[in-house]
Length: 104
Image 1 (cartoon, rainbow, N blue to C red):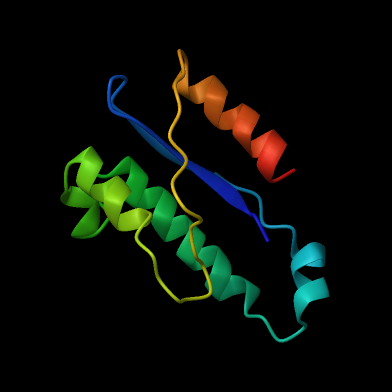
Image 2 (cartoon, rainbow, N blue to C red):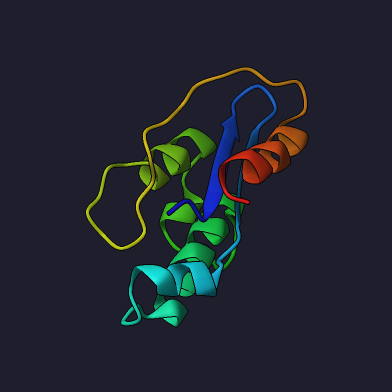
């Protein structure tokens, strides 16, 4: 189930993640999910995107390295899909459009 979008644009020095955790939809998959743990993991991903204080060692890396780390293949509860390259003029607007198209 898609719950968010991570967008990286090197030219605009943009790396941001947005998430919408629909607990009712998630519960349809399983009533044994730890929603708080999922939310904590998603929030950690958002902090890593922002970088700086409170983002841990990964959040101290440069933007390309943080993006590669966030999108690395893993077999955990929170997984990212394959990276889809593209072009955009306004990264923030594109991020919101993708959230609407792919999540909401």
